[in-house]
View 1: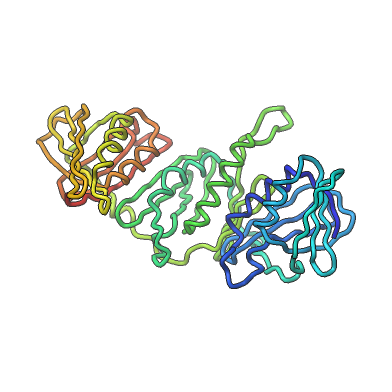
View 2: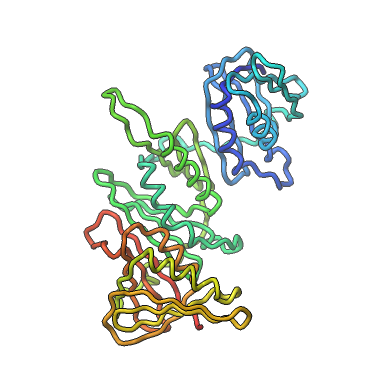
Length: 388
C-alpha cells in the first residue's frame, strides 16, 4: 500500500479514534487502527473495541492499494509531529509501515499487522430505518444528562443513557440511583419511534463527535446558506449507527431494562424555591470545601426569603453561606450531596432555578425557573436527599 494524504485530514480522524481503540485488550489488534486504500481515491480508517466502532474516509492519492493495521496511539503521536502538508504512507508485505512528510527528511517506521487480521466491522442491515437529528440537539441531550450516568460497569442498566424518539420529541434519561436527569426536545416536522440504551463509553465518544461537528460549523448548501450539521441515526438489530462528518460511529446497545423513570419523578412538590442559579452554585462550591470528604453533604435550611447553606466535618470544621431566594413556606432543612446539585446547575442556562421540595426525606426536583409545560425544551433533574 502506498498513498498520500493531507496531514490535517489524517490527524483529525486518527485523533477521533483514540477513544475507541482498546489499548488494554488481550487482543493486540484492537489497539490498532485499520488503514485501507480503496479504488475510489480515499483512505478508509477504522478502530473498534468490539463494542464500539468508528469508521471514516479521507481523500487520498492512491499509488498502490492494500491495507494495514498500526497502533492507534503511535500513529496519532507521529502524525501530530509531522509538518503541515502532504504525508506519504507506505506499507510493505510484512506490514512494516513508513510515514514520511512529503518534501522533508522526517520519517517514522511502525511495526504493523496485516489488514486482514483486523476484526470485521458492523454494518446496518439493508432497509433499517434511519432518522436525521440535528447535532446541536443530540449535543444538548448529552450535555444535560451525562453527569448522572453511573460509572459502575457491573450495573449495565445504570451505566448507560436511555435515548427515546417518541413522535416529534427526542428524549434522554440517565440515573445512577442517587439522581436522575431527563431532557425532552421537540423536533417539529419529524416523526419517529425508537428506543436505545447507549453505554457510557459510547455517550462520551458521541459527545466528542458532536463537539467536533459543531466546531466545523456544518456545510454550505446550493443556495449559499450554511446548513446545521446532522447525524443520521440507524438502529439495526442490537446496534445503533451514527453517521455524519464523513464518519460512521457504531455502538452495541445495552441489553438491559432501564428503570421506570416516570415513577421516580415526583408528580408535584409541596414547596417551590426560586433561587439565582449562579449565586446558588457559588455558595454551594464555597460551603462544600468544608464538607465531609466521604459524603460531600451540605444542609439547605429555608426560611422566608432566605436559604442558608451549611456543612460540618469532624476533620476540617464547618462552612456557612446564605443567599436570598423566593420562598414563603414553613421553615425546613434538608441535606444533599453538593456535587449533585452543582452538576445540575452547570447544565441549566437560565438565570434562575426552581427547586421543588416536599419533605426532609423526599427528593428535590430541579428545573429552569422559566420553563413551562409548552416549552420546546424540557429539562429536570431529581436529586435524592441525604442525612446530614
